[in-house]
Length: 239
Image (cartoon, rainbow, N blue to C red; front, side):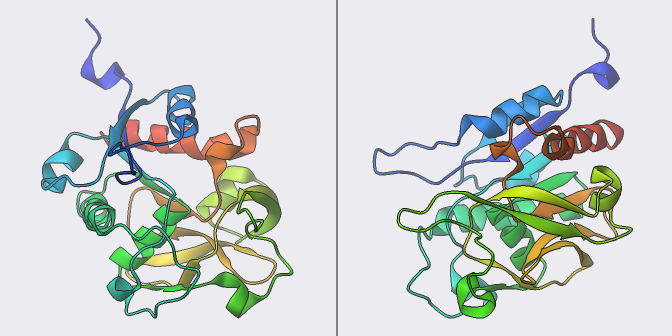
């Protein structure tokens, strides 16, 4: 019988909200990334009323990408480019973000996930990146929206700088919002050339990292998959 200490860690991954067919879904790339890093992925659909119990069943958490957070949750203004607001998902993911911080559960925020962690800690968001930072750096391709690639600069001495061992990396990006201000112990870990916050990490948490890009969309990039391996390693250590 495998000892509990030798079992792969259970990593919860939040999903998109209910679609028109009344289905919950998520891209398989998230699941594949966790499995390839040695974790057991468990999908977490929004709407659960017991986030504390859910968090106690997990060894690690991924807050996945998706639509925008309702601006009233961070005292923001409505913007015509805001899309796919889902109150059910907002409530659940903000609660799970708070549980991850309270229980020191290793957590990786991806794109929307960075924004969820920012809002949960009292920070706020840029409603539409091109309005504040211009279009010199393409954070997503438009009409129709799809991923783009750009470089991010890593902050020297940050966990991500130590993880990637490079001053900058090329990332797959698909977002139009970003963190405007950080709070609650979060600090900058990477930024784009235009100044957009691209990664944050928490000073007082065993392992809490969030990136504005999509590492799961680069399955053949071993650098990007270090994030998932590091999450799984933290989940094992913190179990």
